[in-house]
Length: 204
Image 1 (spheres, rainbow, N blue to C red):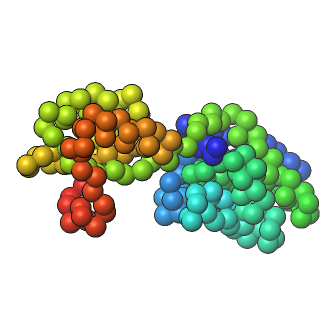
Image 2 (image 1 turned 90 degrees about the vertical axis):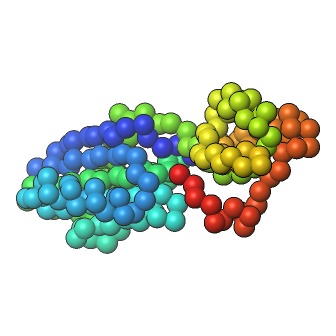
């Protein structure tokens, strides 16, 4: 099961007079991650490097920021992968202390900075959501609202017409159970809608 982080966590170390400030934090996508990295550059204008790695599905990326290729971003990404993390940004700000660390020393410094930050972090399971839409009788609307909490589901949108059209967000693990419960309660009166049947409708 993949995990993400509940809140940012940090580490700091000094290796041969170089200062390394590590941070791990929840992050949804690359655009937001780049904004965070840009903010770190502003916070640390005299830092020599701001290296980063993002584990976020198709948005995953890594950057050495001027360090020798493969000595920072990619090893940091591997630490996140090893911990089975998803939706997490790791950054390490380095202030160069004048003594070269060598390729092996750099890899250890950057991976240790991320690993030490992760030791302070709280991991939480990633919930994968599925979207569902259906039309149900008015008599079932109140029942459904009460039922959602038991399945960890959320009501996204409600539209009233001949029936009640609802849009739901349901944890993937509870999708089949909720569908079965609705079908049973509706006794054949619940109509499930495919994406193409509702694609023109607004969802908040």
